[in-house]
Image 1 (cartoon, rainbow, N blue to C red):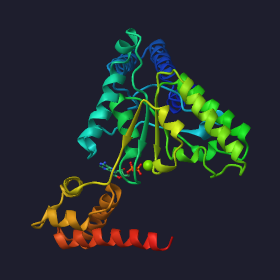
Image 2: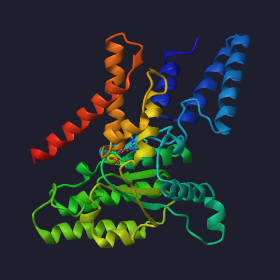
Image 3: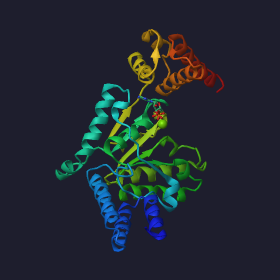
Image 4: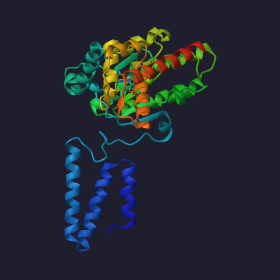
Length: 333
Ligand SMILES: Nc1ncnc2c1ncn2[C@@H]1O[C@H](COP(=O)(O)OP(=O)(O)O)[C@@H](O)[C@H]1O
Ligand SMILES: [Mg+2]
């Protein structure tokens, strides 16, 4: 039997995502069993380790994580949130032009070495703009999923402090991490940088924070992909636009996209006869996320009431409810 220390070491290396240590402890356990005369068990363990290692080198890991990296530690842990999304581009419903531009980023990233051999730089600083609920955050996940890279979400609320010096130092730490660990780094709601929120009221200070961000963005020569997103392109500083390799615009779904969104969510349900064009008209003006939530409401209702079908009228009702929420929200502003 493996010693308590070995079991602890195995667990610890798993928790720390330290794969090489995990394998080395596992080999020690196998060697230990062999010494005790448990040859069969030792062989079985070695075989399991070999299989895991082989799978690892072929790209799929035992922990299902694309790259063995450690979690951000210390102060960085509060500034970056790491995840390993599995989304693919075909999970999204987008304008053909947007798909093409995202595919170009993916292609250039997949051919990083080749492009760099010729002294060229792949696209890696991308700004996504458009109304809420149109897929900007999801796009960051999709790029991570398509490229098999970890997604690091920058916690801007933690970065932006009252003190300019602190904020600049935190941004520095993030850009150091961007260089140290290849990944997708996502600055959501980047309009918060350089706006009043959470910062001092001193306009000069606000400007300095924006400037230091712009400078770090410009100087960054890493292998990571930097994605920034904003629901408020109109208030973004023009200087920000110039620092990105590409600016991609997201919009509310058109009729066809509304129908695809509805169908993608309702596909597993038995539906009555449905006039999709009629529903697309009802949903006109709603964002993707609002349509998704509405369909989920309809599905939940039907589950709760033990009905096994969903009718057109039920879907229209939840869509109208979503619109009412939206109007309610605006009228209270
Ligand atoms: N273009 C899209 N295609 C498919 N689903 C979408 C799309 N946009 C949004 N969604 C759905 O809405 C959710 C929220 O979208 P999100 O990416 O957070 O929007 P944003 O960041 O633009 O506000 C997603 O998780 C997804 O379920
Ligand atoms: Mg978002």
